[in-house]
Image 1 (cartoon, helix red, strand yellow):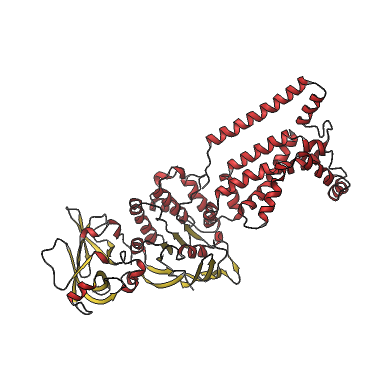
Image 2 (cartoon, rainbow over the protein chains, first blue to last red):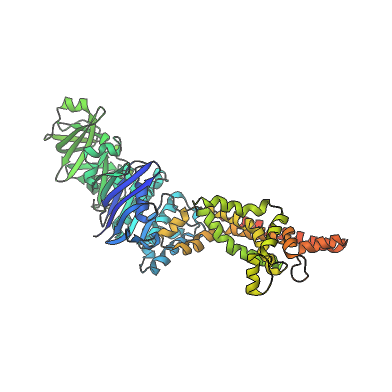
Amino acid sequence: MSGLFVDITLDLPGFHLAVTQGFAPSGLTAVFGPSGSGKSSLLRVIAGLEARAQGRVSFDGQPWQGPNGFIAPHRRGIGYVFQEARLFAHLSVAGNLAYAGRRARKAGRQPDCAAIVAALGLEGLLTRRPSGLSGGEAQRVAMARALMTAPRLLLMDEPLSALDDVAKGAILPYIEAIRDDMQVPVIYVSHSVSEVARLAHHIVMLEAGQVRRVGPAQDILSDPAAAPAFGIRAAGSVLRAQVLAHHDDGLSELAVSGGRLLVPGFAAAIGAEVRVRIAAQDVILSRTRPEGLSALNVLEGELTDLRQGQGPGVMVRLRMGADQDVLARITQRSARALGLAPGQRCFAVIKSLSIAPLDVGGSGPI
Amino acid sequence: MRLAGISVVILLIIGTPLAWWLAQTRSRAKVAVEAITALPLVLPPTVLGFYLLVLLSPNSMLGGAWRDVTGTSLTFSFTGLVVASVLYSLPFTVQPLQASFEAIGRHPMEAAASLGAGPLDRFFTVATPLALRGYLTAMVLSFAHTLGEFGVVLMVGGNIPGQTKVISIAIYEHVETLEYAQAHLLSAILLGISFVVLIAVYATNRRFPVHAG
């Protein structure tokens, strides 16, 4: 069987993890869940760092853990990016990279050092000591070091959680580059919806040590039923878009199914494929094409789902074109007043500035 | 001096794995082993020396076995002195090493494992350089402590010129026989050496601050 397969249980004080799950053999799979849901523990089990885990782990048909034995972490051919950079303080940046590279070559794998250094923009940092790096720089070095093992599987455990928003925004394109160019399956643990929306091809949702939901990222993110798990305020859909133009007034124009989007300007080539996250609570619905509004973006679609939660809100899904959805979170009162029902044509109004720069991400197939 | 040098080497060889084990283990035996390791700190040297004398004497099992194999006695010999001072100085090696291994923690070791480094590889390429200060402290403390010990040496080694005669006992002898000039000289040498060594250690620590983690 190709890819990673996990069938394990792990008992920790006050916590029980039980996961039986296959993982996609390529692309980036986000393991998403709230703090304490067992995401990081699952990643440690996959890496072989949790000796107490029971069950089986295999990769590309090779057993890593099971009744016939246990492959030690250093023999699994994985790359691991931890929450903290965990660079070796006694080595320079280049020394840290070489540490990984030497051992990978001994194991018969061939990392491309120059390409990795370039992909993570480390040319100017190679002679520096880890103690002199900023948080974002250290994490970039840590990612490069993990890639220097020429891993068969790259595990990333909330690599951005210790960074501020500016540093996060600066690093995300590097992670996108790893995802799109490095030909290695990635398992990316995160509790941040915006990171998942921007990076993931597939999502595995964990809750209280159990898998709750699995599927393509776009489907799960725009599924009203999954919205409570993402946090009602963070829920939102991801649209595939193509860059049409960058305007003088600081806005970039994108083509999406169902219309055009103007978003705060960002750097990308004209014609490039990007993904845009639209938070459900930033979407206004209208039965008729609205006019005389300050909001610049109006997308037309068909209402497919209405889902009522515990509170006063309703999650509404609009289908644009063949396979793109927009989620809107409105009040029950509005839904009643508009007489919303599945099958109707509707207009989604989105304020350009509600789309944060972090929500617009680089290319790569979704 | 020779005694101290040899003891330090043996101490590092014995103390490193012991300290590593103590720093890593979750075993219940840890407390007991720690206590035993620390015993020489609190016991009067004469008590330790007395037990060692009994244990190492040719009439005991250990000492007897040693005599049967090598034909020499462990007591009142240089070898016996080395054994005694290794035991006596063990805490001065193990405790600094254990502390610095604990300060490193498991994080860098897990990172090294994820980069393809096996257990021994990790130990020598990550734990050891990160624990460099601990090694330095351990070496200096156990060297100085062995150099200055008195009670245990007197009990186990006696005072045989060229064999078991060490500086501290020579000083004692000079004082006994009222040869204050020689006592002054030897004491000053010991004081000077200790001071210079400590200065060197602290200066090195300042110039190469190795931070764990």
